[in-house]
Length: 253
Image (cartoon, rainbow, N blue to C red; front, top):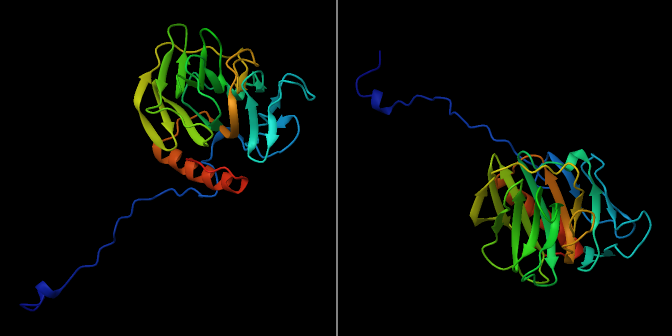
């Protein structure tokens, strides 16, 4: 029995429910990527995939050095806008366009692109069946196309020249989004018909195995996921890549 007058002074200690949180190491890229290219080799004909899936890229059109090779430098690769590209071929591990996916490119564009697209990353054709990030009308652009008209999302502002920027294209369900840095751009879009890209080579810096749409500028890192990253995960990757690239003289905007 509680003496009269003491009940108001007593408190009952109860366990506090805590929501479990899943922490991700800030010193790693968000796990689960299909491919991750750090562009830190400095020499050679191979762009190494650090995912463990062996989705390595080949510089140019031949096993040895050729005129289609972008040039190595301290910050990564430089593409000349005329005939340079890196190809990963038609590896099934990069044929992610028919479900959730994320494409990430860290680039420093060297030229404007008022009327001609410059391909950055993806499976790019000149007609139907493609998904990619590119430069067009002086903006970053995400493009998805099945058997009908192209679906595009452009960045809110023009891209900055000679400035390292991270750009991300996601598909979550049928919703397409574009991020610059860690900022979601105002426009979004929806997939109407699926893209059949199994026979299209995954290429950096140009369309399918270097046919057209050549990119001019620096390239510092890239990654592919067969999942759609959330805004929080994209921010995590932005911070991680900013720290990873800073010692190489790459300062992300």
